[in-house]
Image 1 (tube, helix red, strand yellow):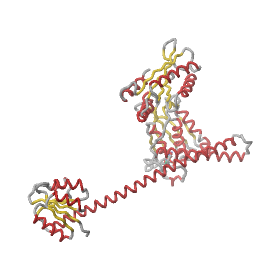
Image 2 (image 1 turned 120 degrees about the horizontal axis):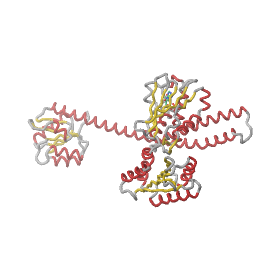
Image 3 (image 1 turned 180 degrees about the vertical axis):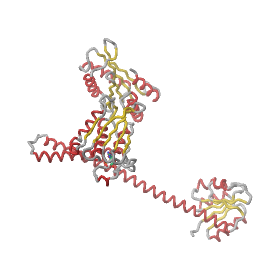
Image 4 (image 1 turned 90 degrees about the vertical axis):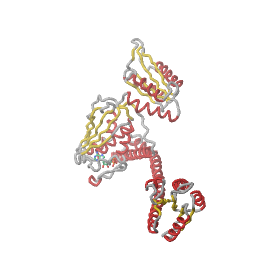
Length: 511
Ligand code: ADP
């Protein structure tokens, strides 16, 4: 048994002496004192692990003493002594931080039992504290290694990208016949090289996305009103050869008139490439991949999209895990070893950054369906996905923020003028060049353009005037059309953040 150093505090001398003897007999070292004040003095100069104190004492009583000791020497454990018949309960004593209490008079066995209990508890706590410190240290180390790994992935991927781009360019030059005619074999081999470079590029992009997500920076998206059909066509095109080789058909059942979606076009191509790529990978030859829409969500602000295949499906055990990073499911059944297990994790991140949701449905053996939502292009989503986050960014960086509303008016009818598709494209092209790349230009219904700009009122007005002059000078708009604009700026024109956002909503809604 390890010897403990115990301080005994009791105002009655004979009691102190008696306890001292008992503790010595048990085999611990003991120091005795008659008052709380003296006890505190002694504790300042000598280390003790346990203090046994009477409760009822003149001057500082046991409760006050324990409180003072707990504040100054938090590692000391207490046993309280109460006289027989005293009114304190066990809970009173525990409430001030004592481990146990003992009623006077007591036998040596009773004291030994109490002391053993306190010592056991003290050792246990010391052990736990030690373990928790070790765990914390190990955790710190893991975090450091994890950070190192992320930095490593990020820098390696960046480094790999440049030489790969060069290789790709040269192979393209050769394939396009710029350096002389190619034989059949040369063309075939370069084609294979090219296909693998594309695979490698996709892999590197996946790793870069992964490290962006991991570092907490998140994916930076560029939202723009987009036709989903075009996104799907882009994605499907990258697989034309594989689809042909595996005799898999892609059926696009989307209605060409579905509303525009407010998305980051390139990121969504990535999502479709991942879903269709998986579909091809897990579907036997002769199968089919279908892309369809289930219409709008209940709130009517998102479109439900479904990608279904006729492949091996996903087992109920795998289903909840397939969106986890690095999860690759029951590979043994399919014998497939390609992939990183990151594709769906990134697809999920992209959809969620669009404030959408994604999930998978499958009955093992009868194909898999991936269902996700995308924001439709509307005032509400412009507000949620573009204006609000940009304004928050301005707030955080303490820069001004302005909303510029550009409208087109027919001079004769004095009514809003809807521009033709061609004029509209020209206007958008001109506007994009007139604002900084951090600002956003959003066309709405061929008659209004919103510009969200990190500028103050004065500069916002300047932008508006420049737009007016440029569009009138260049032949971007038909004759007889006026360009008008309004600006609304923070902090100049709204006292609070809430007021400004409310004002923006009104300005966006106005037709
Ligand atoms: P991987 O690079 O392994 O394809 P993903 O994150 O894209 O990584 O997919 C994770 C896992 O989900 C896959 O390994 C596979 O087990 C399962 N999975 C994904 N798509 C399908 C699908 N269309 N059919 C069957 N299983 C799928």
